Image (tube, rainbow, N blue to C red; front, top):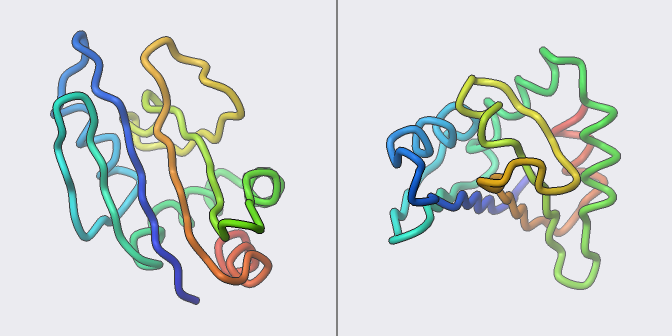
Length: 125
């Protein structure tokens, strides 16, 4: 199962950069991190998602995740787009959200994969 993962979180002026990095580190085992002026972006491949997969299993939200993956799938670009709560990620939890719930924004995750069915079975299986 091959995929490419890009997770990006905006860093607002009132937020602590270290807390944003911790939130991303709690959810992803990323290979690379880029700290910009107003955002932090982490990237990786399938292994980056192991903690994320574990959270889905522990919290028993695999079916919810499956629905959100299908909803966020773009067949044209072969990219799944998901949003995660920054606050939940900082607390070491995964909370998938449909809309921006926090005024500080969410973590936007883009997962590129050729086979969404196979990927979803792996992640939510």
